[in-house]
Length: 485
Ligand SMILES: [Zn+2]
Image (cartoon, rainbow, N blue to C red; front, side):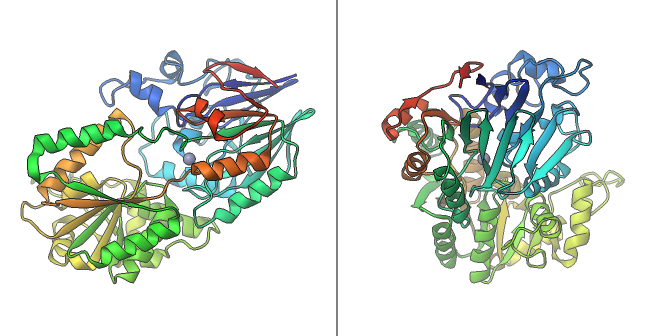
């Protein structure tokens, strides 16, 4: 008899931690950070976890003996499989004991390490003790009584996999996060082809985009309140609907064509496909492509450390450095170029050489020649704060990620809207396509898989799967609940 126990990713998007047990073998499918739960109990920087036990208290981490760093007893958990390099799927692995093997794709490992290098080291990011074992798509890997086959899928970050898992007589499919409308949709087709060849008993399927049509009413209400507060100055959102990443590239290219002045785009920190689309849109409009340090470092390191194709070439990207105080200066408020910067930024300065914009002069150049540049950043609010000198210059904004879907995100969005209003931006575009399958693609994948039992995960509306597709059985998991398979 085998079983699945759900420690995250149930009735919520992200935080996947699913324990699969068979005979004496125990493996976790993903070990993601649970942002929702942490936000419910903590408030950075005033209320934050001190160490691992605090995360166990709030059940962000399962209370399993020996599983964590510094635990003295031995754990019976053999391994963790990581589906892709998004924090809500791998974020708690630094806390694991060195005896737990971490299986993940080669690019997945590099992306996790590159991203980790861009943050200050602390107990939640220490990774030197981890035992990584890398796989390639199609490999078959045996961990005692369980074996699994990773197959690449398309998602908004490279190094994404779904798994087919063999547990005694039973065969499981785990989708991870996936979509069928990106540049690499062929990868998802490969996964679906592999599913068709198997007799899948249990399918663990993501459902990020399975939600009621009117779910974003709270955001509409927030926008209404914002307009009431700010009045006519409130920036208006123009939404361009796109069905594919290619459509996003075309739409942004066209929109930028008509824009006078600087273009600032906010995109997710690891959305490599979007950075590719934006780079092409910048090139088509004869604009230099400027990235914030974290995104620039990801692209330049991926170019040198992985064989991922079609990335913007490192020599074609510029970086705009954020402000860091020169602590050796006797005058207050002076910025530093290299000294006092994080190690990753110093190495980026060496890599980009002439193509580094920094300090009052660098920003003055952007304000003086705003038509020459397109800036991509994961934090437009900070970018706008730093670029602003009190005098208006022509500037446009494109939101190229999903709109806020939690209170926390709405609070940040509120600040961004204030900055847009301060810049005199009357309207801005939202041009985006999801990193996850749309309804009809998910329906197709589930039908192709044709499982005996379907278990919806990574969704706020698992019950909606009942109307999505006809399968023999739908099992809606509960937090910490065990499903015998
Ligand atoms: Zn993801």
